[in-house]
Length: 135
Image 1 (cartoon, one colour):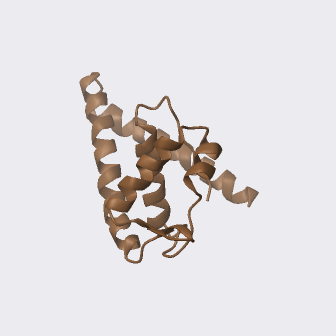
Image 2 (tube, one colour; image 1 turned 45 degrees about the horizontal axis):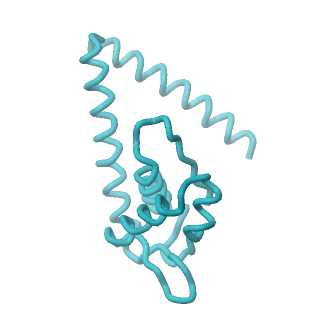
């Protein structure tokens, strides 16, 4: 599993890690019982403070997404897939709402916002197709 963070996007790094784990569980890229990287491994991979990763893992554990198994490491909990699928939609809706609100406050009309969203979706579709061709 490969995680990435963007320190410049305004979302705290620990939240980015939490979201990525939840999305990976929702997509079943991470499956129940599957090991996650250790705090040390993930902090080195992302070049972030280990305390940041530990905080993300604590949040995920308190939400029942992951658990620590003595002698084994951190694994995805049973039942986490459905929980993460439900949360994925609400997380994305919340972020989308914030972006749309900002666009409208910046003076864009609803028509301009729709056009911008359509353009971005077309760009993303092209990116997804290019990635699929590489695999």
